[in-house]
Image (cartoon, rainbow, N blue to C red; front, side):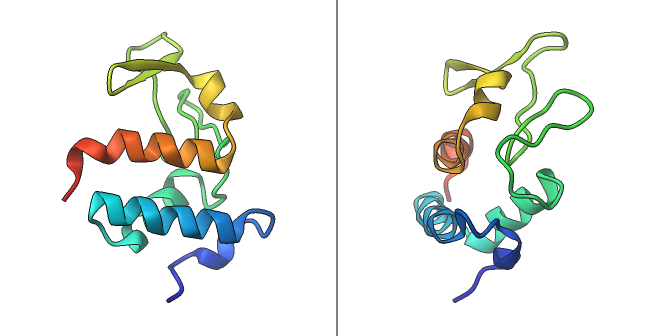
Length: 106
């Protein structure tokens, strides 16, 4: 079954991306189309893990700084520099997306 916006994911990593989104969605007990829609919108239709917006957020789901002026995001007690998040490849960042949404499973 094809996912929404699947054809918008860059060809260079499309198959791995779709496979990982499906796996993560299964763990989160959500429809993978929901996750695809969020990432499509948040990454400005690019599915780019390095995509930045004008207020300092970055990535597939636009991780934003914890506090104004600080350049990190805390996920499950671990601090990640936004610049490091932007350098992650799609697979690493999808792992972070999973960690971010993990507490909302089901």
